[in-house]
Amino acid sequence: MIKIAVTGACGRMGGLIIENVLKSKDLKLVSAIDVTNIGKDIGEVMRAGKLNVLVEDANNIDAALDRSKPDVLIDFTIAPAAVKNVTASARKKVALVVGTTGFTPEQRTLMEKAIKENNVSAVITPNFSIGVNVFWGLLAEAAKRLGDYDVEIIEAHHNQKKDAPSGTAVKAAEVISKAQGGKELIYGRHGISPRQKEIGIHAVRGGDIVGDHTVLFAGDGERIEIKHQAHNRQAFAKGAVKAAAWVFTAKPGVYEMADVLELRTRI
Image: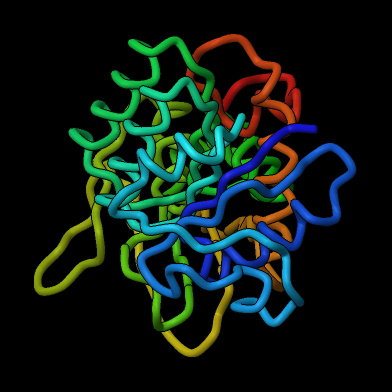
C-alpha cells in the first residue's frame, strides 16, 4: 500500500482527494494536514464517518510527516503554503503531487530546487484532468497550423478562486506561444489597445463555475474554438490520485501529467 498525506485536507479539493484515496485498493490515507479543524478526525470533518486519521497542523508539517511517514504528499492549497509543504516533504524524501496554482517564477524555482537536491520525484501541473491534458495537446497541434490567426483565451471559475488567470489558461497560452515561436501574453485589455503579435487572456469569476476554458483562433472569414469544461472537481481529484500511484515508482525528477498519461509528446 502506498501511504498518502493530503495537505489542504479540509478544503473542497482535499476532501474529494481523500474520498478517492479511500476508494483505491493501492493507496492508504495516513495523514490529513490543514490549518483548520486541528485534532479532529478528518472523516468526521468530511461527514464520512470516523477514519482514525486526525487533522494535523500545517504550521508544523515536519512533525506531521515524521509521525505518519507518507510515501506521497498531495498538495492542493495556495502558493505560499504549497512552497513550504513541498520543500518540507522533499527534505523528508516524500514524493509529491502538486495541483496548487498561482506560483511566481521564484516560488517554482524554490520547489524544483528542493525536489532535485533531495532526489525525489514530483508531478506538478496546473490541471490533473485527463481532458485538459488532451486539450493542451489539441491546442499545440492547432497553433502549428494557424500561425497567422489571432488567439484569445477566455477562462471562467467560481467566485472563490484566488489566482487569475487560471494556471490552466496560462499553460494553454504557453503551449500556443511555444508552437508559434513566441508571443507576448496580454492579460485583459482596456483603453486604446491595438492588437499586436500577442495572445489575449481573460478571466471571469462568478458563482460556482468549476472551470471553463475556451481558446479562440480567429482568422479572416472564420474562427475555430477549442473548449474544455469541467462539470465537477472529480476530474481533478481522480487525476491527482492516479498521479500519486504513478509518482511513487517514478525516477527522481519533476514531471507533468502528460508523463503520467503517457501522451505521445510532453506538452
